[in-house]
Each structure stands twice: as C-alpha cells, then as structure tokens.
Image (cartoon, rainbow, N blue to C red; front, side, top):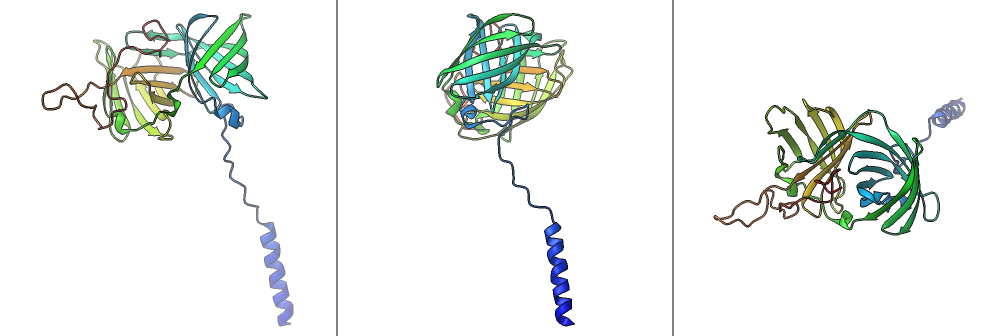
Length: 290
C-alpha cells in the first residue's frame, strides 16, 4: 500500500511538472521602430551621416539600430534602413515639412501629414551610401550620404554639466543628466525639461527624454537621443508617439575662468563638450549648416 501511494504521489508530481509552461528564452535581438529585427550588418551603419538629396541642400542624419532621424534645409525625416543582402539597402522614410524653423536658435519641429520616400540604396563603401528614391507624390531623385568618424567618441554625463545655449535658448544640465531649459526671448514662455542617460560610454550617443511646455509647437513628451558633436555642440533628435519630430542644437558652456584666466575646462571636469565653437553642420537651414 505504501509503495502504491508513493508511486501515485510521484505520478501526480510528474504530471504537474509536465504541465508547467516552458521557460521562454529571452529575446536579446535588436529591433527597429517597426518591430523588425536589426541584423549585424545594419548595426554597423550606426552613426551620424551627412549628404544631400539631388545635390541640393545639406542633409544630416542619425542612423541607430535600424532607425533614421534626419533633416535638411526645409523638412525632417524619420524611418528605417534595411540591408537585405550583400550591399543592398532598403530605406523607407516619411518626410515632414517644418512646422517651426527657428534658424537663430537651431530649433526645428515637424508635425502634420507626411510624404513617403522609398529609397533603393547601395552601401558603396563602408562609410558611403548612394541611392535613388521615389516619393508618394510622384517625385524621383537621388541620395548620397557619408558617415562621420565621430561614432566611436566617448560619452560622459560629467562632460555635459553646465549651461548650453543658443541665441535665445538655454539648457542647464546636472552631473546626473537632468536638465531644465527655457527661452529668454520676450514673450516666449517655452520651457523644457528631461533626463539624459548613457547608452554605451564608448560611443557618442546618449538616450534622452524631454517634456516641452508653452512652446509654439512640439509640446508634450518626446523620446530620442543626444550627442556632443566634434564641434562641441549638443544635438537632440527626438520624436513622440504621434510621429512629431523635434531637433535642437546648443553651443557648449563657456569655459570657466581659473585664477582670473580664460583657460580651463567646462563644468563637470571633463574636456569633452567643454569648448564653445561656431556653427556646425547640424540643423536644417543655412544657419545650421544642414
């Protein structure tokens, strides 16, 4: 009888164990914003790129994990890039006219209806892309892009500490990556706050969230990325759940005087992002050089 009860208990236990759901393997694959798995060859495209459509106007783009954020002189873009085989590239973008184009403050926002760009591209070299496109409006043309060398630059929260500025805007950043900014222009009550986080200290790109209030456009919560460029300027690329796009660029904090001199590094003790410079190639107009 004891043996029978032992056999029955073991049988029930075995049945219950067999009914338990199998542990699901963790999916560590990188996916783009469309939910598609990003291949290793596509991850190698990560970085900042400059170029142009139809040899007219400057284009600046961020490619990260199969996604693209870009802007030129009068519109912005977002979409995905795929490398289906060999050196072939398939790029699908949505283009939005600027809602606000503040060239004096390097601030650009896009909302509203989009034009689709279907681009057949070729990775001509490791650092160059060429392609042809067709838009949903029936336009045709070509695209060229060249990759910058900045992707392997280190990122650091300490290098961001201080007051980053434009003509009328400022952004104050702490050593923990928190920031608060606003417009100093008369009659402009725009303000923005958020947080910056490191993704990989060995790479230039950082993750950011930003909430804007009382601005003429692009209010609410946005998520995106920041980076300090080779020109020591802070760039922001962000979007929200409605597909609206926001691009901003700030000059570095002024160097702190040391013992009455004008030398020294910016707040935070890190020379990265510490020296103010002139306009860089970022932005969406002639003043911003994009």
